[in-house]
Image (tube, rainbow, N blue to C red; front, side, top):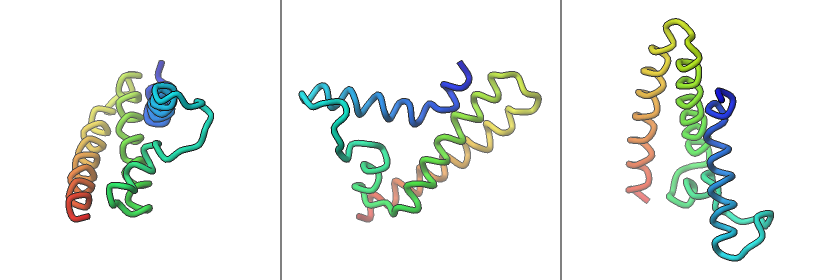
Length: 99
């Protein structure tokens, strides 16, 4: 179960895009710009910030997986990753509002 939690961001993104394509009657293998990366770029975020935001989100889910595995003191990693994700989300919100 832990590898799925570590890879939650790309797995959830892939599943969400496939479901949206099927809902619209498209092939799940067709290319489009519905992935998280493209949606964040459309909000006005830079390419660099978009990638860093997705890395931060993945770090957060990974830190939760490590904590659930029972690694000692991993709770502090979850706290740090949560703070980092909160700051990144706040910055993303402000950048999107400016666009």
